[in-house]
Image 1: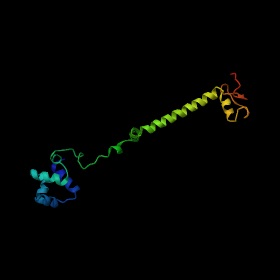
Image 2: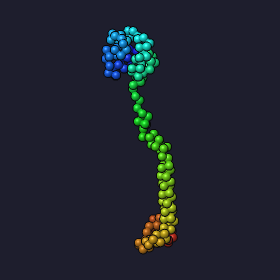
Image 3: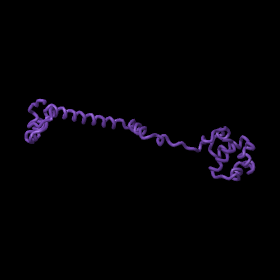
Image 4: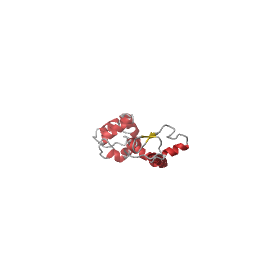
Length: 161
């Protein structure tokens, strides 16, 4: 972008006419028009005043830059650019202790489930359930986990077929 293109863009974004800008700088409207058409360049003190009026640096006004790198273009905040995985990871870094408790609870539940399956597989669950009042013998038997046959009690040993 040339100086004139930048000046015209900044002036239009600020909602100023060439006359209003010329009045603020104490120059003629034709001078502003020549600056915007890149026919002439303003004096150094006018460049500094333009930078102050539009809130940009003199480097921005004077250096040639690609069109897409204007200071008024706001980049989206980094949080909006992150996908859901990155947001989850950022949350877990802030609240890491919650993730730890969830994993501990999950592990405890897995251990309890493993212990119950082990006891059922070994045929000891019948004796355990007898303590709470519903023995397999009272229920009419059960299925042996070793050979998958109907048995009358889990405590009776089973012979595989």
